[in-house]
Image (cartoon, rainbow, N blue to C red; front, side):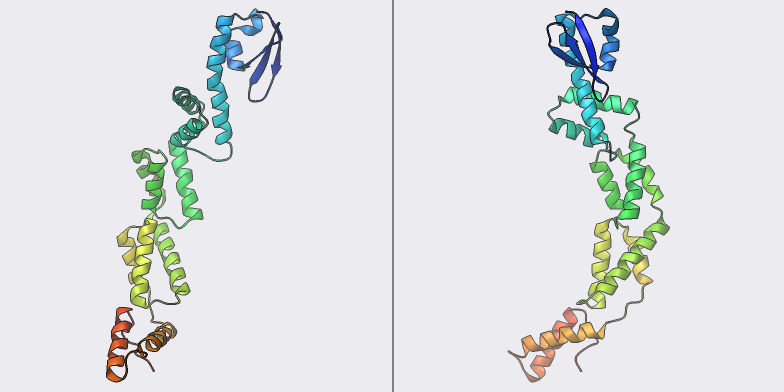
Length: 250
């Protein structure tokens, strides 16, 4: 069938207008691959082949749009394409094309991801590593790049987080506050040894205002049931259980 004209669209796609008025959409690479600009005609068999091969370029453009404003891993791109009902074989071909065109590079992604986490979050290296692996980054790459999150930077982060938790503490004794900080930092992905080293270098001072408020709450509750020495003993036991071992009322 004769080709009447080529009409350029977005993303290197063309409308190929045929003599019967029908339109075939094809990527410019396919037009060049099958010499359509020279032949000016197309068989039904070739048309079917181009339509099939063009699905890869359509998926390729979907992927390009997905990664336009944010770097993505191969795993993320493949999952996105599958959600868009792209055939898995085509999705794999698209990922190979993106790699060849340098749109995907796991090493670059890992470095950018780690730097973002360092600058924009409180996450520690262990949590960052887990997230990278979950996103499909090879463990060897993730472990080699996490070294940019050096120990000095980790220590600064740990101290900053601990200082903030201490400042915002309104209810806990220093004993329970320390445990809370250790648990919180561990969950964020920092190594236990670095956490303990930082905690041991922080001066914790019991806040008597917190102790007093807890004492008053306990006294008010227990005084309804107990009195005298028994009340004093019960209050002492409860205060001890909360980590307030010095403050026993004024």
